[in-house]
Length: 299
Image (cartoon, rainbow, N blue to C red):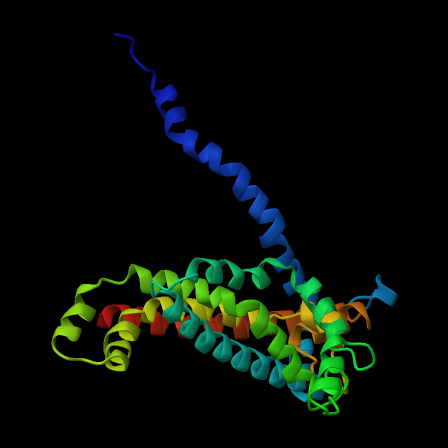
């Protein structure tokens, strides 16, 4: 029997780490280095016009946003957008998932049809709805005007209609995402609690409220978490439909950071805003994870 030398044994033990080394280096270059660089950038007053003149301001960029009215407006718009879009998508997705979980005729075709909006790129969706809702030659305004005999509003240029229109388009595109996750959760639930409740005389809404929704709680919270994060960093729809207007009514935090960084070239302040946005997102995630773990333990 051939003996393995101690040095060869050490090499064999280290072999898995050698395979892990390339992805670790890749992640460090793609993720870690930009994060560290942006944190360093947030501590400087650095403008693209004077690249060589960097002034260390410490937490000055973070303190600056306290008195920045545009920042607080973008936070308000972002929270309104994320909360309304996610809530509506959840209720519609749950309703569709409950319908699609039944053995109805043509339900497979309906499931496939519902997935179509989610397959289109958000930028394309924004451009498509921008043309459909155009006040002069949009198809939707044409039908409203000629068939309903109503003067339609200027959906994307009126201060009261722009944000609800963006939320509507987000709901149109991402309700199927909620639908898929909730449908998978419903179909994976055990049958015997519902069957036992039916034998005891429970009605449909009682089974839904007291059995289905409590069992579905972890799935619901994961779906809400994913959509909340995604809607919180919305950029594509704002870029393709309103560009933050009219009068900043649709200026979300992502769009405001883009404006500060790539329109006014104030990179230091834009980096500080990005870190604040990351902090808000992490706080939301941690709170939702706490609720998820609490719900799972209770079950």
